[in-house]
Length: 602
Image (tube, rainbow, N blue to C red; front, side, top):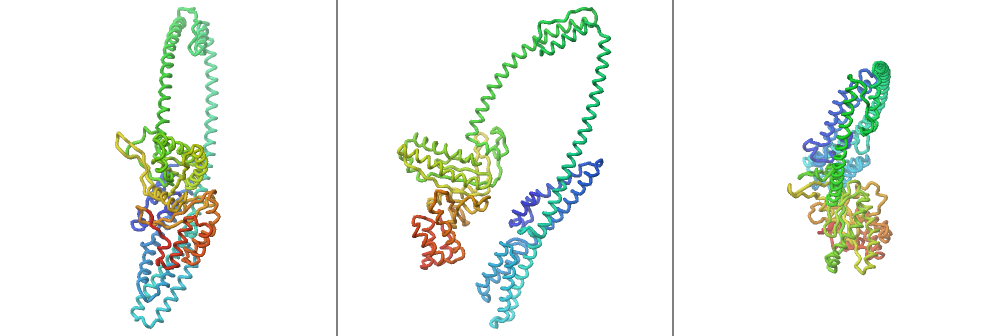
């Protein structure tokens, strides 16, 4: 079922799937399906009719789930995505319409806006709006006498084709029902719920059957044990009547010897007869002495070996602890290794994590005033406070780069953001100590980004190093660099903001859309505000209102908002930037929308 959910989450927006039909999640689903059917086929509950019936029912439900899921896949493929199948064909028609002059650009933009609003929100009102607009455009084309008849037919051909395909796409979305959990998706979920209930019932019945079988075997064991005890008593009584007193005495000595754990040296049985029992008694005396002698020697060797192993184990433990300081245990866990001895060259694993890149502001200037020893003491004192905070919140250190720290958080970004806020509490105390010692106080800037990365080993067979390879790491570093420009303590990308599990715990604001060095795509970045940044929090509501005006292209209204904010908070860099951009646009110093919404930063 997880493979199905992963397919809906990732492949429905994956252009590669629509172009090739290949899907790792679909392959996983088919593998799990075949394995489940194979395991069920091996189950034999022929003697338990109720269990056999439940297993057959579960197999039927699995077949129904598979049938509905595969039909959903065909519907999704038919619908297409972006440039593929029905959506791709629809876009080709509207792209043709965008190039002609007979339809106003405003109408085309309205068509595209309604189309995109529907695709994003999946609300029927946008279908109605688009249909109404198409009818209006169609009427205008038909009544426009300046357009030749053949040209009208061609325009209406593409307009009607676009409208028809859009309606088909909306119908397919409603039939599939992924976005609002209706239609085929709802049917699939219901069948999965029924199958899970059947499986739980099978588990419960199996446990009852197992208990019943265990009770039956226990009863058999008790009966057999009782029989054996009775037989043993009878045989013992028979032997005791046949064996003479020397054997009884020998038995008593043997029992005492065994009870003493083979260490009794004082008592020896007396040889009373010259028959087999007498020889047995004599042989026991020889055996007893030999056993005691061998056990003493063995105990001495065991004590020596135990001491050696204890020392070796102590050294191994110390070595393991030392290794963990250079290669984090969390890194080994992600690689699926229990210890550093198992790590091999080329070991690697892909994970989605949140990267935190933190750097001390103007550390070069600070370090110039310190001796080499003072530099190391300063950095180590700083890291001694930062690292425990990272570990306490579920992260681990990937590397130290001078005064910079790069940490990875395998779970949700919430822990990473909380960690950065706790940095500020530590810095407050740390700076107090610096001030007492007449040393310059410090501030840090932190960049946060969430994305896929590869953890692994590189190097040579004689020299290995663990590392992280990912564009996401470079992005986090670049985002940290933006903190200086925006005079912000913490900046995160939209990829991080979108994956926060509890957004109500944090306060943040949109900063800009930027092109950072080394990235061709524009990134949306946000500033996270700690409880100590009271002025920024105080202005947050009005600030967000201004951002909404910009998004709605109401620049004059946005300029009014940011002008008021600039008067109250002239030192707020984000407010300065948006105020200046809006003013430039209002004063016609900039002409394009990009001048308002984008900034190129290295």
